[in-house]
Image 1 (cartoon, rainbow, N blue to C red):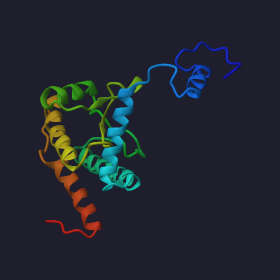
Image 2 (image 1 turned 120 degrees about the vertical axis):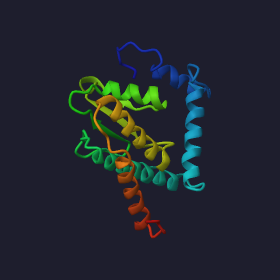
Image 3 (image 1 turned 90 degrees about the horizontal axis):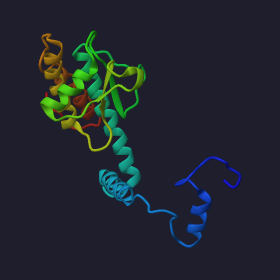
Length: 186
């Protein structure tokens, strides 16, 4: 820190150290980020009925379940997953052959006001991504998969078996509830 020659402004830790000694910050902090972090932590704490650590575990478990549901739905529609060992935060799905994934992303936005992300960098136009972490649950997953069926029908011009993705996702969900020993309908 003392010998660095790189130009810096916000990351001048010497100024921050001086200010911290006086109980201040060198620059105006991004208070909106602190407020957002507080709200996010309250959401996670709520998932754990007041226990932040339990809430974190519930958040991860929920993301894993939504991811498994989404992947089952995508496969039921004949789509290929991009990653062979995906993380729970999102599912990257390869666009059908000959279709720019930007058209899928745009159709989600225009028809359903839904946010699905395009690929980035060299994967732009080749994959689209569906998130699973945060304020995202069973109904969001079922909704996005139902919308995906319509989006694919419109963007590919091919016949889509409506309900196939939703059914596959519901089967994953039903198995997860059964595994927890809870009653599930047929």
